[in-house]
Amino acid sequence: FNITTPAKDYYHLTIGGSGSYTATVPGLITVLGNLTINDPVNFAHNTLLLGGNWIYNGGTLSNMGTVNFNGAATQNVEGTASTTFNSITISGSGSLDLQTNTAFTGTLTLASGAVSLNGPAKMTLISNSGGTGMIAPITGTGGITATFVIQCYDGRTAPSWQTLSTPVQSDLLNDWNASNQPSPATPSGYFYMSGVGGVNGNAENFISVDKFVEKTNAYDPITNFASPGISYHLKQGEGLYIWMANSMISMSPFTYITNGVPNTGSGITIGVTDQNSGWNMIGNPYPCPISWSTFQSHNTSLASTFYIYEDDQTWHPFGAGSNIAMEQGFMVTSFSNTTLSFFETDKILLSTNLLSPGDPTKALNSVTFTLADDSNSRFACPTTITFGNGYSPSYDPNEDALYIPGKEKKVPVLVTYSSDNRNLILNKLPDGATQIDVPMSAICNVPADYTLSCFNTANLSSYQCVCLIDKKTGNILNNFENNSVYTFSASQAGQEFDYLVRFTQLEPGQSCTGANLLTSNGTAANSVEGLNQTDPASGNYTIIPTQAGADIVFSFPQAEDVIISAYNMLGQKVIDDLHTNVSSNQINIALPQTTGVYAIRVETPTGVTVKKLYR
Image (cartoon, rainbow, N blue to C red; front, side, top):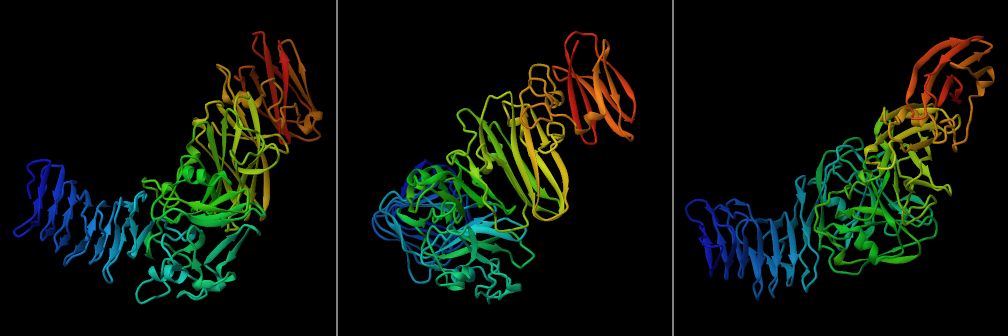
């Protein structure tokens, strides 16, 4: 099968008879009539224009490009073997009639014509760890009446809740479940349908399918709705919670399938409400990713942020520039009771896997904190702070993202607060302040050890220092520039820890350590609002300026451990930390002879005092 020029027309072309064949010159191959393949063929990624029937009788097909069916009449896919195409285009005035099972791994494009079928033949959209097929935007007169087997790869390795939507018409929950069960059906399918009437029975009264109700902000079992349980009618554009597992305690990567005529065409609708929070769980109805920005532009009642329920069992916020995978359920915020519409123009031909619409944690001038339960590190909650010109310190639904409680009650909660006290997991703040304190709360829903991690401080263009401060005492707990994690323990369920995250700009030559011990005007760094606060024990000691530096006179009723240090106004430490045990003592501190302003810092078990001295 040697092509000597980039384009060559054939009428009927038969390949095969005595070995394997290769299209050796890349280009456009045109076959005006039927193409019959009997032996292995290496297509060398050529584009094939086919005016007649595709007849495939066996042999490995490698490096396939696009097969463009451009005939004026009905064209068949037939033969004694099933064909797996790369990409398919239908641009003729007829239809593509599947007379044998057919599949594709790339893109199906319908410029005109249709995909129909003959008898039990089906078209399979292939999805695996290497990528997912998709149906391109239909902008012409094309349509689909054939039954598809639509695959969707899920790479997770632990059982968890996931939000999904159906990509086909008129599907029951039972059909969705049965498609993914072994044959004969046993309680080991990857959709662990428990308590809804499926083959898995009722494991410990566990109901494995839920629906989120905006009016009550509740995750309700599917058994509470019309056509309950396994008979529930899946709606185009609706998102549901599914327990993804092959048992109650295990999960392996797999490809689940959906059978039916694919959802196509513009005007697919789903109703949403604004009777409580405005949060509504919907889903991508198309066998193709969609662009959030395009979808939102068609539905102006929505806030600028949408949410994906990630594997850590927390809702993660995403916005402009993000794409939503096929069959992905997602949460939106609506400002009114309305109907949302999906359009073919919302589709985008970019490979997007489930749970991976983008990563806002890596945005410029942003930093992300994550709170994780050390006893179950999968249970975690991230919160992101972004700085930029024009952002408001108060909650703005077109900038910020509110925290949405997840279904799993054991997951910790980590939020920051806007100036009007709204709890946020995406907090966009105005840029340019020399120093800013952002309130943060950590809620630990199980007694355990916890790790608070800070990521991507290098993305911050305005601030070089990020410190964690105990909001009640003003003590600096951690400098994230020196240590990216802070660990602590919760002794009871629901225990809450209140912090401030301090962001500081550095002057030339200033160090992060010193800058975070002092505010820009030299007052104590343990200030909640930049005001000077002192150690409650400071009544038991006095810092007295001397010609050489300072004398610190202690009068504790019992011996106490203290740490004494000193800094210049560039934040540079001018004496090493002095660790000592004192009761009624006097300690003399010698400062450098250079004229300037210095700060003496005294730390006791109850807090910190910082006093400015002039030389």
